[in-house]
Each structure stands twice: as structure tokens, then as C-alpha cells.
Image 1 (cartoon, rainbow, N blue to C red):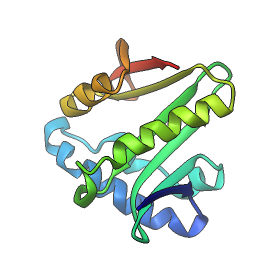
Image 2 (cartoon, rainbow, N blue to C red):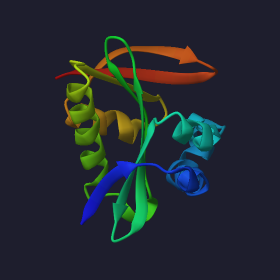
Image 3 (cartoon, rainbow, N blue to C red):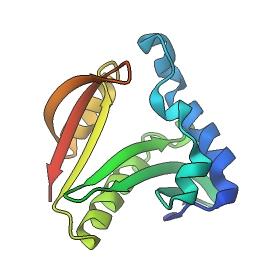
Length: 148
């Protein structure tokens, strides 16, 4: 059974490792580390922005959510390579949508790297619509939104 809970300060190092493992295969394709590999998970956890997915007591996914005035930004979603393809990513997306509704937001926004073609297709399959593309902090990003 998979559960989703707020991240605890003691999770930060594990979350950093999980993100590195989940995004490592993109380094060669992008020519640099993806932004989630460089995030300060301790600071994000302390800000109350990180949620974790646990399966059989092991952390297998993470979600970084930022509440904005008019939407919820899904800043990062990552699933451990050993748990990819098991539905945990979809559970995390559904959780983000539920959090948006709980906070009175009618839209979830996210972005991914242009080189992460699998993610682009994945988000489209889950009802997100591409809104634009732009270069931000040296990354070529594809932006999506989903109206709830």
C-alpha cells in the first residue's frame, strides 16, 4: 500500500538521493544535471513544500508543491527508478490536484525540460495542456496547466 505524507527534516538526504536516481538518466541527454538534482531538499522540507510517497515503509516518491495566489505549482515530482511504472506518479499527481482544490485553487501548473520527452507525453496523458515553452535558468522548459 502506498501512502503520501508530509516530508520530515530527516527525509531530506534521502529525497536528494531519490531525485538524483530518478533524473540521472537525463544528464547525458540534456548535457547538464536537471534542476531537481540541484534542489536544496532540506530547505524545501523546512518550508513545508515536500510530500513523500511511501510503499511498504520505503520512500519511493516525492512531490514539491508551491501554493501560488492563483494556482498550485507542481515544482517537482519524482519516483524512484525501482518504483517507476507502478502508478505512484499518478497517485502523486492526483494528490497535487486534491491539495489545489483544498486550497481553493482551480489550476495546477508544472514544467518539464524539453529533453524529457517521456514526461511531456506523460503529462498530456494526465490531462495537462502545454501553455508555452521558454528558456529559464539555462533550461529549455515546456510549461503545462491543468484546470480542475
